[in-house]
Length: 261
Length: 250
Image (cartoon, rainbow over all chains, first blue to last red; front, side, top):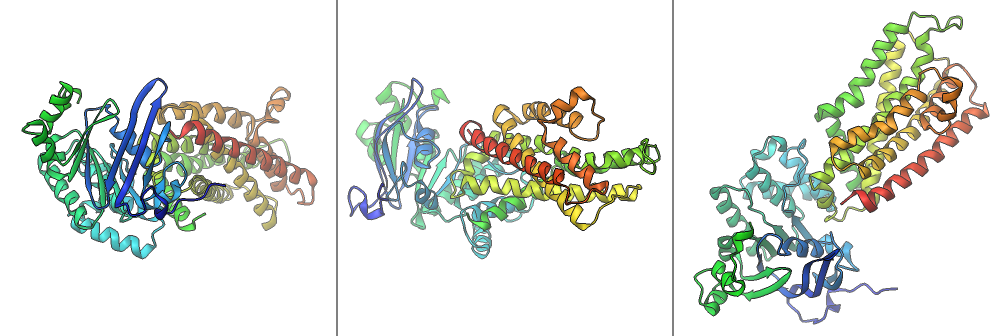
């Protein structure tokens, strides 16, 4: 019988890490999507996972959130092994998927409340948290309408709010601003930044360079499933003598991140 | 099992029934229309048995008929949730597959009970007089609930095979048509009786016909048919859930 790991059982008991990824490999048939990924993300950190389309960002998030089983290696989320303690992992996380996955015949508020209930929150908790989220995101009026009438940007905003209803310790935001107009994107950036003040660990995947630069404490640049650069955006730029992260990527790989987008 | 999670999903599924025109039509309006049309058209036609109209022989089959179309709505709902990434999203929450599937069985059972009530009430309005008591109605409800479980299972099998909600609609008819023609109120020839042996709707319709014709509930044939359809329902729902979990949910 396997012993369930408690947060104290993780590799380093004094670790301040929210996520530890160890030799993670994920293959789809012959395609190597994630190749021996090793990474530690600190508690309360806003970590940007940057890379072109098909680099392995979403696959990594899917493994961390329990949607995919690793081919080899493993990852600890909040101290729990994603291969063994998925139930515990799911209690800690909130996931904003790349595509706006919402029930179109429900209102925005009903969508948020539903996912609160699925996380096992009480009716009172769901109501209070929903009110709070809607107010902070300035989404209260919009949330009264059915999601089928939402614009792309509104659907994506709702997508993000659903991910945060359970007040997760660790939030995975997979390309949360794709398809948003510049104003909505700025507003969402502010909202994501505010999560840091709540001491949440945020893993943000994006192929928008300026988004990663503006929001992240540290970024990991991933290409062909491999981590090719890691560090605070300014340090990476300084280290590679680059003006921005796009140039860092260009200098390392000889290609541009946005080429594949 | 977390009751709050199941209840939340049941509420959502019932909201879909009210808010999605396709589901509302297939699950509620269609059975009402069908019962009214058949009642008005065949209510005064002689069945060949004294005092029994042609519609009297059809009404029990209409109950099963309405329930069969649940295969299509379940298949569409699951394919749609898969296509929109909602299954994946729900899979990142602590929701278990047992709670998720259980909520669908529960909500569809509730819909089937509503269908039975509507079809019976409208049948009675247009002249149908079932020769049974409260106990007979209760057994008829149980029979329909077993058929609803079959329909949910067949809907899951359909959603596993279908790649999109549109394809699910077409594939659902593979399961709907035989049950519709050989297992409800259509008159059966000897050749088709062999096919009906494999159709849960045929057992349900036969048993309800017996109950509504005044056969006492002590008759073992009614209970044999209920047992048969219950076993079929359990096998189909287990196969449906397992197939969908393994191949249909991604």
